Image (cartoon, rainbow, N blue to C red; front, side, top):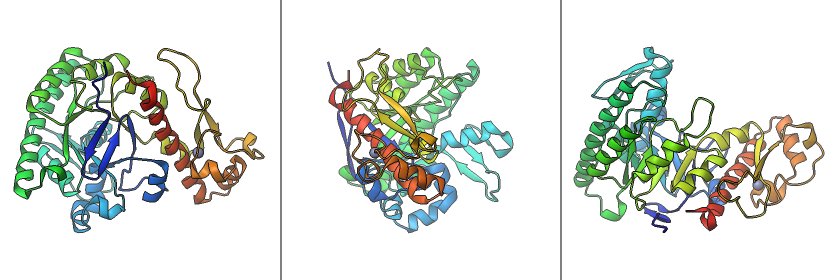
Length: 369
Ligand SMILES: [Zn+2]
């Protein structure tokens, strides 16, 4: 039985599942340009409503014709709702903002402006940015939060999802966007680690009706381990024909695990952040992935900063065809890193992104349930 979707058609192109989306938080994947991303085989990127509404600001983005023309990226863009970042900011310190049934108000440190994010506003922004996938504003929690917080979050997430859907439909009609150019709308399933709440949230959102769903809330426990049980349970609550985005899942091992559960989309800043810190990902085998449950080591880290790299004249990976591996040695990368040259950041980022794309290709070839 394989009823999971293998692809998705969007206004700016097709996604093949599973697919990994780098985070282009402020409208750019740091240190690489759109052509570099295409060369790595990246199908789509995630851009961040919370950050973009502050810089360069929504009116500037709209004046520039949306995120695609602003950034020169021609393939699909998923924008997040901004809820997770606003939640993280307020959770970090309540002086930065507050949340109520109407929406979220926040004022980041150093900013003179107060920002308001309501379900309606989040949808309006994402549509004005020209996103291919628009995500509903949700009320995020941490898996360790108490029961009442989780209950409140589910109630609010459902309520906000309804308002997001209404606003989305209203704008589609008002702007008379033809069916094939319409973005998709994803709901986000909350409920922390509590099975009944996840089910309650999923059922209500399925009834409202969305094109796909995100796993809401931080997917890792306090030790950084994937919350396998609840992540799998949440996938099973949604019919397999509807794609699911494992929001924020980016560790290669977690991607393999979640893809095998039927998750289709992944995004994370981890691979590009690791690249900047000279931690590169390397496959240990030419083309396979271990069987489910196997403890075989299928990838390892190469630390470019390490002394062992000084005279290593081989490529980062024998199994990689990226610009970095096809042209330059580990030793040269080490040198670039030591002299703080920007080329190091570009080559290292391209390599880790190519690794992530190759990982999803390997999963498509045989790692699916
Ligand atoms: Zn490479």
